[in-house]
Amino acid sequence: MHSITLKAALALLGATSVAASFANNRLCLKLLAQGVEVDLPTTSDYETEQINYWSTACSSLRPDCIIAPKNAQDMARAVAAIRESNTTRFAIKSGGHSPNTLFSSIEDGVLISTRNLKQITYNEQSQTAVLGPGLKWEEAVGGLKDKGQVVVGGRLGGIGVGGLLLGGGLSFLSSQYGWAANNVVNFEVVLANATIVNANATSNPDLYAVMKGGSGNFGIVTAFTVKTHPQDPEIWGGTMFYSGNYSHELTQAIRDFAEYNTDDKASIIGTINRNPSLLWVIFLTYNGPTPPDDVFRNFTQVPAIRNLTKKQSYHSLMLANDQFITHGKRFAIGAETSVHPTGPNGPAVFQSFIDHWNNITDSLTSVPGMASSLALQPLPRSITTKAKESGGDVVGFDPKYDYMLLQIAVSYNNSASDSIVEDGARRYYTGQRQMIDQFTQEGKLPSAYTPLYLNDLNACQDFWGRISQATRDKALAVRRAVDPKQFFQKRATGGFHLG
Ligand SMILES: Cc1cc2nc3c(=O)[nH]c(=O)nc-3n(C[C@H](O)[C@H](O)[C@H](O)COP(=O)(O)OP(=O)(O)OC[C@H]3O[C@@H](n4cnc5c(N)ncnc54)[C@H](O)[C@@H]3O)c2cc1C
Image (tube, rainbow, N blue to C red; front, side, top):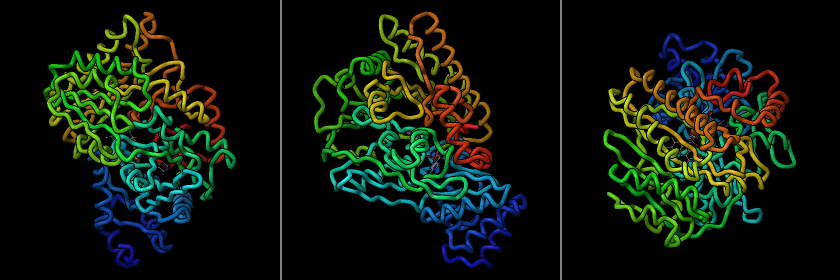
């Protein structure tokens, strides 16, 4: 494909839909002529890229072409060409795991794929690694395994480095080292004016501060330099599956773990799934070869249908976790944040969160191929304390509290069900917020700053509206300085735009 001639390219573009915009086609050909890798519709590289999304709703969108820069200079050429075209809209893709359509997928515009930016360069002296945004986390972690080092990133191997790092990044290692974004020491970024800059503690520090969790509002990242940490060759972890008969015990186990665990090496993701029967899938990880006896006892003492926990490398844990995720479906997601419910009312409040998800799921059972899950993700103060100590981030959770991140994910078969499922996701997160507000008014939850976690949100949720005014103002000031004409706000189709 890379050696395609302009004549062949024109023939391929001629075969695309009449709706394909003339301006976009011209831009694609211009970049091709400049030596930038460009996939045109119907080529095998184009189709391979299109398959590589978590949600088939994203795969079904058809960009006019896919630009695949090989370095920051190529990326700058792409940005300059898009700017010049005046009308072209674009999306940026790393791992393609966001199920929100138009975030990293696009119809009738151009897609910028970071798939050729897969560099992994380890610097032993500074204990850092340069990671390309085209890497998946399993590649990043696998690439550093032989060095005895690990990077803080996704808990499932198939997630992209780019989206996760720019949105925050909750890792099994976060209680030890903070959000993944807190571990970034430098962003190499292509700005709206097509210049390539570095953002770090000393160079462009304001930009650096707001890129830690501020997503793609400020530019396109072509390389992340992240801290590495020494890693045991073997850790303990894996997945446990339980029938719905043990819902009471598991609800209690997750709530208690989030309240009482003090071991920063231990972390969990609790998920409850209906497809159509109830199944609990709990991801347990201990970042050491053997967990102390009592850390996960509340889970290990409940009879499991399947227990896949074992000693293994961190890399193999990430690969294994990916196997228990649904693929090949359309997805709708939505999320809320609560202070973790504790005290005498804690168990009932926590149970009502699960009941709310169950009620929403009941209302969707007629949707063909529907499966619904609720992820219960503890966000202990150990994470947010480390986040603050390392210089903070956009989301800025208050380390005075332990939080619980709640996320619904509904998978289904057909586009005909898009509106009913999206409505279900919306009813989930709006209803969840109302419950939290009500509990707060009743004194069952403390009145606290509860921002939303960007990477788990539905596209319709107001990420920036829940960020503290001071941080939002700071982010807006940086956006005005680096992108005064709102190139990324107006021309990039996806992400949580700042305005
Ligand atoms: C199965 C599953 C498991 C998950 N597990 C976790 C988890 O353990 N921890 C966690 O924190 N999150 C998790 N998430 C959420 C995940 O972090 C987000 O979906 C994230 O956006 C995925 O990153 P990506 O690169 O694959 O996404 P993409 O869909 O490629 O991109 C997401 C967004 O980031 C933007 N973007 C990507 N790369 C760049 C770049 N180089 N420059 C500028 N903008 C860019 C895109 O334009 C898009 O708006 C999970 C999601 C799924 C579906």
